[in-house]
Image: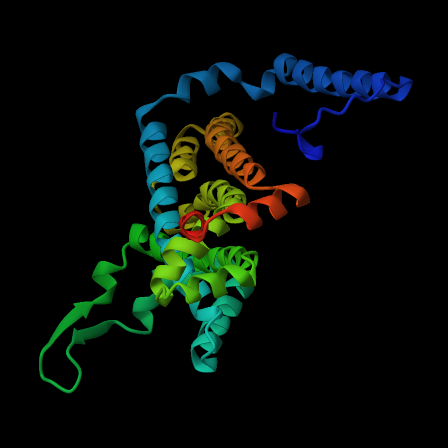
Length: 305
């Protein structure tokens, strides 16, 4: 019979009078807030419900979700490259990654978005071609840097700096012995990264990445300053015409809250999945000694891979 780990045992804490007091205070605060929201006519809940599922709001919601998905996918790939560069033994390579991370983490996202939207002021025309040849194609930067393109570029480059640090922290959590074991099996650097290091970084990287996804979802509201018809911009366009500012802001806030809660569910499931897999791999000292003494070498290699 498998023994329960200490962290898996259920703790039983006796109730104390202050526990009931805190519950009563919390319930009173929530009830007061709900009562105020329901009885205050200035919230104009009929207006909120009438605009909650209008076509323009739903279109803005779709653009917000697409921006979040595309920016997170691209920033995760770029962050992985930056993390590998950051941990490189070649000082020029690691230095370039450090400069990138320091710059994009040290400047506000809103400033970066506006900068990329106006990048044509610096480079109105660029040429893409083969170096040292006459083969090139001119590109009109002002034509391709639309508000949506600037939003994707700005969000991706900024988020990649944070994702690189998250992934680098995951790499640092892998024991040195795993690197040495992979190298002793003759794995190349890419194979070691794909088969050994990345799978073991997932338990520490996934929770932080989930938080970044939720943060990215809310950061997409900044693209409204570029004229991108996201959720917030759609709400602003409506209340600019009918002057129902508070109800339309409530509509946008409710949709952001719903999407955040929906994204939190798979994040919690993935976290529990990885935490269970990590707990199953833990052994007691006696079991570790028995496993090391009796397990054949091929089985040990297979578990490593």
